[in-house]
Image (tube, rainbow over all chains, first blue to last red; front, side, top):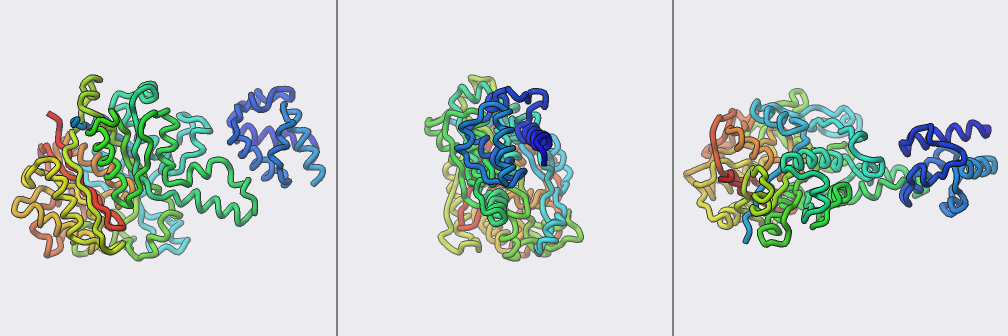
Length: 82
Length: 406
């Protein structure tokens, strides 16, 4: 899976799972605020990432993620390690 | 002591998804029983069940509000919204007022089993997701509805087997009567998925008359062969008379008596003494004579032991002046945790529309019960006072007496 395919898949499950319109997803937008994530929502975000990309997520990893681009970069890096 | 009245009712059941549909089904004697093919694939002895659609709540609730709702919580949301409309209570009123919730629920098997399935498959608890814990607990209905409606009063689930819904109303009645709470959303909810019914099917208690599902539930009939599991949700909003009158609410009925008892006997086999005590206690509390009761909505589930013991208790208590009697489980199947609340809703619909719903499929009553005053067919009749019985595993019994408000 190349980077564009990873981003496309991430955007797909964000729209589906968190019920947001695709147009609100911008690389520099704030992930937490745009998706209106609370602490429980991060649990479901982990489920989606692990189910789609097959690597184990350490919840503390989300500490360094602010924007959608941060999130893409994190998943791309971890997916490459797998 | 305060007088306690019912100002809102709502229903989501296999005989209708709202009060109007259910009223028509009750009047026409329409069954909601069908076959679940998946149960046969899973090795169930019986595929018979109440048939319910899953409500679509996407337009009504946010993702976070929906994610913690198990099947029975979804049913309960729908029945509660209907009851709120009947009661003239909107969400702002619920959030700002002295409103509590007491609901009957005694299982949430499907989310528990699905979570363990995931764990066994993936060896990773993180993959169970955030909603499962809130769906899995017995208090799933009250924890979700109290959050959705921002309730500030009592917040409690009653788990008392097949008497859960009835005890929820009884306990709420006591709280309002004593002045501890002004308004309480009561009810009962029951999941209908195969995951929740396998262990019960294994007891051999369910009817296997699969060739004619609508005719399979036959409470009190010699030819019955067992109960049919069913479910959904029913909501009964109760409040003090002062509160209802101050709001100008329509009053559906006044709760006069709540009787309860425990058999102190076998875990699944009922007896006569326990229900007799519950019936007598409800009459005493209501300060009524047995002859004042005009209709009894029986617990009768269509099992030999249950029907016979309840029938004998009713004969003992009501003697020569038997009230009209029917088991609406002949149409709905056994709605278990929900039944005590739904059968109050069914009886209120009858009382306000001047008819007694039939005990369908009853052709040949047990010899010992021929003195009971069965409603074999729909009876057009005004009546003012009814009694609703609910009994459950462990020998828990509950009887409620409700009177038309005048």
